[in-house]
Structures are given as C-alpha cells and as structure tokens.
Image (cartoon, rainbow, N blue to C red; front, side, top):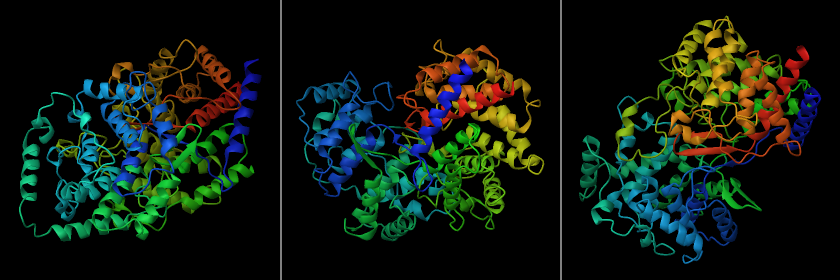
Length: 622
C-alpha cells in the first residue's frame, strides 16, 4: 500500500518539476531571506535620490507581513527578535511614509528600546543610519582605503577576507573614510533608547590592540593631508568596476552590490553612468512582487537548484535521454566558467585553468567548490561524462587545485583561514573568512569517488580523515551551508558511502543512530536555525520536508530500508504533499551561521522528490 502511495507522490512531484523548468533548461525559485534586503534597498534608493513610488505600497506590505507578534522582526521564520533587523525594517517603513504612530510601528519601537536601541545594533545598521546623519560616524569602525595596496601575502589584505566579505569591504573603504551624510526623508532620533549616554554612540565597541588601531585610523583621517588617499580611491574604483558581473551585480549577492553603488556614487558616478545603470537594472531583476508584496532577493540559485533537480529526477528513474534532463544538462554545460580567472586564482598555481560553476546566473569571477562538485555529480548521473569528458575533467582539476592545506575544501577560496580578521571592530556580523567545512568537503569527496576512486585515492583518503575528525561525539556532523546537523550528517554520510561503506561502517552507523533518535513523532525530521547558537538543540525542531528528506536519504543509502523510521518518514512526506509539492516556512539554508539564513523554495520540493525516488528504487530491489 505504501509503495503505491510513494509512486503516486513521486509521479506528482516529477510532473511538478517538469512544469517548473524554464524553457532554457534551468530550475530555480525564490531565495527567501529576512526583511533587511528590502529595507536596505529602500535606504539605497533614498541615498542615491531615486523614488520609492513604484514599490512603496508593495514593499510596506511585505515588511509588515514579516513582523512578529511582539512588534519585532527576526532573521528566520519563528526566530527570536533581532534588534538590527527590527531597526532596519522600522527605518524602511518610516522612509516609505508609513505612519510612525501606527500600532506596528509603536510595537517595533518598544522592542528596539527594550533591546538597547541603535547603540546596541550591529555595525552595518549603524553605518546605514550614519549615511543619513542619524548616527555619528565616530561610533562606526574605520577601515583605511590604503588597505587596497597590501599584497596578498601581508596580513589583513583584502584577500584575507572571504570573497563575499572582501567584495563588501572594498567599497566600504571609500564609504567609511568619506563618511557622507545625506538628508533623510525623515528624522529617526527615536531609535536611540532613552537614557543612552552620548559616549555609547560615539565609541566603537571593543578593546585591545585592534580597538586602538581603529582610534589611530580615526586620528589619521583628521589630518589635513593623506598623500596616498586619492590613489587608493582610484585603485578601489578600478577593483570594483573590474568585478562587476554581466547582470550588473557584484558577486551575484546583495551586500557588495549596494555598497559598490554607494561607493561609486561618492566617487562621482551618477545614476545615468553605464556602470550604475547596469547595477540598478540588475537589482530590479532580483526583486519579486506578488500577493506577498515587493521584496529583494539576496541572491539567486539556478545552478545549484538545477544540479539537484537533475539528481532528483535521475534518482526517481527518469532516463538520461529525457528531454527535460537533456535540456538541463545543456544549460549547465554552457554555464561552466572556462575563460575567467577570479580572485580564487591568487592562491592557486598560475597554470591552474578555470573549470568551476557559480551559484548564480552570472558570477564568473566567483565559482565555488560546492556548486562545481554537485554539478559534476549531476552530469555523471545524467551520463553526460560520455559527451563532455573534457568539461568534467576541467572541473575535477579545478576542485583539486582549490584544496586547502588541511586537505579539505572551503566554498570559494583555498586557505582562507586567517581568524585574526575577526578581531577588528568592523567584524561583528557574518562570516568573515571561508575555511574548509565538512559539507563542502563531503561534496568534493563524493564527486571524486564517483569520477574515479582509484585515480584520486591519495586526495580522497586525507579528506575522509578530515571528515572523520569532525564527527560530533553524538554521531552527527555540523552543517555550514545548510541547517544544520541534519544537513551536515547527510552530506558526510553520503560521501563516505560513495568512498567505501565497509571502511566507514562504524561512523556511518553512529550517524544513522543519531538521526533515528531525533525523528519526530509525526515521522518527520526538523532542526531550527537556533542550533548555531545552541548546539545542544541539534536535530530538534518542527518537521520540514527538506530536512526529513535529508535524513531519509541518509538512512536509505546506508541500507536501513526496512527500519521502521523509514516507513514513518516516507508516510510523513506522502501525507504532507499538496498539489505535487510541499510547503515549508522554516529556513533550512544557511548564509552565515548565527547571522543570515535562507529559505530555498526549491529545497522543499527537490529533496523530498529525491527521497521518494530512492525509496521506490530500494523497495523495488528488495
């Protein structure tokens, strides 16, 4: 009976995927984050003198729809109140003309005051308010534009930072030094909590040598002459413009995009300049306006989504010559980056050829290991290695070249591990470096094992040793790019199974037992983003389709097909399916642990489809 239900649900899911595919061959859906993306876009428009009218009412609708019961905004669905997110949402609403005397605004302001007001906000929020004269620049950390001259082998050069951080920091070297003040659409002095001493606003939080360095930079900035400053500005502008992507973005993500626009504006680039015009047009393409309101996506994920969709379809029995798969493979092949060397090449041998894939439609300068590994897995699953062996070899060679000294992989760079950058006062939000992680390494290992386990044995073995060293005493693995221990455990166990099931029998069994012990009474699995704050909550949370699928795939691939937990989990997926797909409000993707989370709207569909397909195949074999 269950088998028939699985086939019916899987067929409905496949039909949904077929209908969702673009005519070019890719799949993607909304990449949902928190309201700061929309709020900061409103503030950007205000800073560069562009009107709100085209999006005013729809943006208000979206921001208000995300407000929590207590008046705050959070970083993720059902998350706790977040001060900076609440402040930025409040500012955007007020800029858009929403009544500050309304109940939502009064409740929001009450939360802001209760949590300490603007003085307790993160650096980026303070900076946004400083741009409009609502917070003193003296209380914002400084970064000297002369940093741009530091070669990559000197500590604290911009390449010591993760690619997403360096692309943000580069334009901020101009913004934080020029300290512009724009007349705001309205005053926002009420964001400072009553009783806040002036010193709390004028002083950069922190202590130690880096705090004193910040003071020294501020003193230097007050001098009448700065001999190398204009040259530094010119070099930064050149660096920024050289890294603008074809779609107008920088890195295909929101933070460097908006700060690059502001920096160029300060350097005299008008809204009509081709670089700015291209950037603004690109931002519009990242927006969504529907019955939920107007909002800006932080990024788009078509390459990632398409690779996983191919894998889900192949695991569901769709043949490699099916037109949907053929079209998707052709699109992916055309997305491979073969001619552009980005920042990743700085720490690689000069003879390393490009061969990776990026996450987005356009991000040639920043391909990543995770996407590249999963794309290769999808091409292998679609038997594309027969038609494109050279393309796959280029990808494999590039991934091997990107391996860090500890024999594992980060996402975008090799050996991006300088923890000292977290000591600067500016580094109070988000991941600042891109060290090797369990999940990315697992995908690279799985890819190498499926390409040629014998040929790449000397690379696979030390990487597996790294993975085993990272296993939590409870049996699970941490997830850097997905929430959290369920994601990490799925990634690593899948990789170990691809290498040698028997050799890793004990760690795999411990991981499976951990998963089984965390199954919810409804048959599903779930885990909250709060596990990044409190690891004792690993594997605990309301059931979600994507996390249930990750757990099921792990158990099924490990050979536990007949375990009662499998049947309960599959029943959960079948029963929760609606119109061929699944609903998922919870965020199960991770941008920056503790600071930025993602609800990939394709996750709720792709991974349950894959789990159903694998289950059907396993049951058929038994």
